[in-house]
Amino acid sequence: MHHHFLLFKPDGYLTQFVYNNKRKKKLLGELYNFPEGTMAIGRLDENSEGLLLLTTDGMMSEKVRSKKVEKEYYVMLDGIITQEAIDQLQQGVEIGIRNEKYTTKPCKAFILEEVPNFPTRTKKIRDERHGPTSWASITITEGKNRQVRKMTAAVGFPTLRLVRVRIGSIKLGNLQPGEVRELEVIEVD
Image (cartoon, rainbow, N blue to C red; front, side):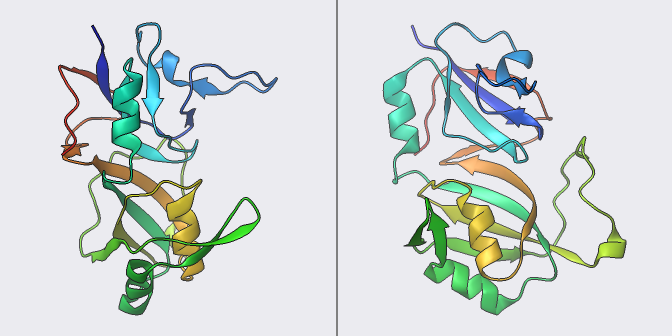
């Protein structure tokens, strides 16, 4: 029988269970006693937060990571993002992937009128003296390395905070950073 989990990955954690480098890093296994064979479905980089699905079922991992499943991110941006920049994101922008130019697929993007009510991060982002910030929602179906961060930088609004809020139909909801819920089944459609 397979196990499935929903996790609010806090910032500062690697999306892995083993780290073979000399520098000490915080790993997912420190948050919960996951059963042997548990794997993260996709990744969130160390400074990113939010919804992470984990499973002991490799086939489920493949299904969720497919290009058919939407992943939605709320991003805090450096500066007040313009509708023109949102339009560019929606059409696809050129980013670098492994030293090659890559144009992202069209995506859903819009400005968030209200600041999302996320818990305060452990590591401070910056304060208002460094200029204004804004929030946007970006929904993609691909998952290139640091893609959303590269996309917002490409349109002139670097990402300061990134929180994944949805994978398919599964939402982060009111989960708190570090909180884990076991799921009976993962249904993303």
